[in-house]
Every structure is written in C-alpha cells, then in structure tokens.
Image 1 (cartoon, rainbow, N blue to C red):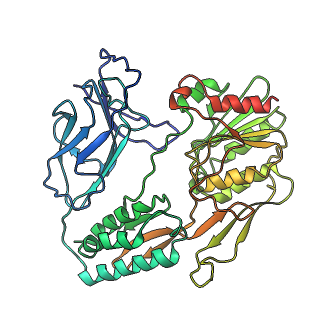
Image 2: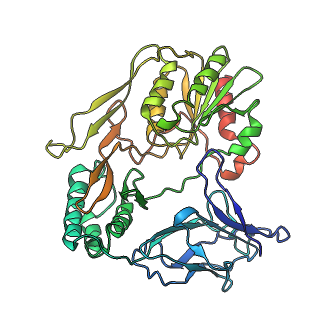
Image 3: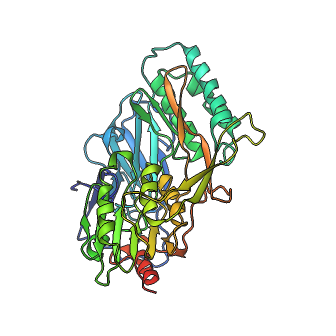
Length: 452
C-alpha cells in the first residue's frame, strides 16, 4: 500500500506532516446508526513517561473492526517515531507501526486529525482523533540528584504561589505531585526532568504552561481544536480573495462589503500587518466590513490594539486583569484596567463591522474580541472562543529547567473572569466541518447582519 505525505491543516495554520493513505476504489457507504470507531488502548499508552527505548512496535487497538483501505497518522519533526518498514494491520482491530526509538526522547502523534480522517470502521465512519504522547527513559546524569529534589520543591512552590489559574483548574495538585515525585527526582538528566514536568503540568489543560531546558521544549498540554472555517473554501468564496502579506488576506463583495482576514498577532508579523491598514483604507467607503480572525490564536496584544484603534473615536475600557500575589488577602493584586486608544496616523473606519470568531481564537486574539465589543455597530459572529489568557512568566529551576506559568487572570470590564469559558459571539452560528466544504455559514451570517 502506498503512503503519501500530506499537510492536512489549512495553509493559514502551522504545517503538520501526515502519513495518510486511501484506496480510491474502496468506497464504503456509512451505516446510518453505526458509532464512530475509537481507540481503546495503545502500546505505549498515551502519557507514558518511562518507556523502554528498545521498544520496536507501537500497537493501536480500536473498539470495532476497521477498514484496511486507509489510515492517517498525523505528526512530524523530531517528535515523530522513526518508522521501520510500512505500518500495517495486525488484525481487523489492531494497527501496528514498527519503529526505532531514541533514549531520553519525547514522542507525539495522532491517530486521525482534523485535516486527515482516513482511519475508518467498516461502517465507513472515521475514527475519533486520538493523541498519543510518550517519553523514553535513558541518558546519563550531568547534575547531582539533590538538584532534582530542590527543583521539584521549587516547582511545587511556584504552582502554589505564582500560577494564576491554580485554583480554577480541576487538578488535585497534592496527588499529582505525589505521583510524579519519583520520576522527577530520579530523572537521569535535566532534559528528562523537563519532560516529566511537562507531562505532569499537562493535567492543568493550560496552553500557556510550557517547559524547556536550554533550547529544547517539552510537551505539555496541546489542544486539538479545528477551526470553524475552511481556507480553501474561503479562497473561492470571497470575491477577489488574495494574499496581501504573511498575515493578511482580503477581498471585496460586489455590493461594497469588504473582507479582511488576519491570521496572527505575532510580534514578528508587525510589518505584515501594514497590509491590513492598506486594505482598510481602500474599504473605508464600503457598505460594511468583515474582519475574520477564526484562524488567529493570538500573539502581541499591542498589535491587536493598534488595529482595533482604527474603529473608535475615544478611549474605551475593554478588559481588566490582576496579577497573582500571594501576599494579598485575595491572592491577587488590585485589578488593572486595559484601555483601547484611538489609533493615530492610521485609517479610520466607522461603518458596520462583523468580526468572525470561533474555537481556535484565544489569548491576545480574545483580547481583540473584547476590544471590538466596544466598537459601535460591531458584532461578533460565529462560535465562542477558546478561553485562555495567561501572560506567562519564566522561572528557572535549580537544575536549569525553565517553566513558564500564567501570571495573571484576565477579566471582562465588569470584573468577571472568562478563563476556561471564552468570549461568546453576538450572532451564534453552529456548524459542522462538512458545512464548510462548499460554503461558509459564518460568512453568510455576517453578510446577512451587514446587509440589514
């Protein structure tokens, strides 16, 4: 069977290598009431952190008989296991990959993923995506064991005293640190300590927690959230759709409604944002404006403020935040206000606006949503955003491992916290991935709003 490398994610998102194959002749009609297959067990198990590097076979077992006509193993880079020969089926329910593993190494891949769903049951239904992360043991220690114990204690203190969302996470920290004490304190190297720490802290399900040693980052929590959009469909659907820079795409409808897509607020894309201002200037006389941030997971809030400032005439309060402070009775500093200032020397737009949002949107892009909620005649359209903002700070442990932890809690202007809840839209559009193959119900709802 032939395997091909594909990129299942939209071109607007980060690339992900995929081992994926299908047989065009094998078309299976889905059974109406058949349940989607799921992975029931794997070897190694997801989350294993002491795997023997001599392991030569990875096994993936499903809960029902599977079609042999396709598979999608999503992953890439240094974290993808080196394959020996071709993956194949051991039985109707067990898929195997012969591999060669490295000692003291982090591995991660997915069985199916939003852009590649070729593992299917005999009913024709695609298997639910499943993530597998594991680490191998091994390596020689270059520090004293006591430094790991000191680092373990310091990490626990940081969680208790400095992690701003410690108490809203559904985590039993005492039990978690007890479970990981032996592997952390007995780690062969700082790298292995970092890997175990990443595994442990993943329990918080916080994308703003990260762990690294020197230049190497270790896996912590990774979200698997497909966008409520399809970039290929958008490129055909929006009239005059074109790439204007590394972060900006735009188009214009015949009736004058403009469309600007901004894929990221990252600081390194500051120059690329100039294209958004050029497009905004050409659209200033239009009937309405769509700003699409459904692929945008944040970056620099300053960049977002500068763009949002094009739509207001006076300073407006859009959010508050408070830093973790164990010395305060509340555990936090007094709230600080975040104010959006009108942009200077930038185009101004005072027409009707629809901001397209969804579950990929988080962090500084959620701050952008809060800014735009203060703009007259502007509505958020789509689905609720992800709900995560942390302003993470770095802390170096005695063994040289660095941990980044969220330092603040961010709030609505009235003081309510939205961490873990997200920013809901003004116009809700609930749609399935297949709804975006030939159309875009979120764009349609935005056009309807703007044309009222």
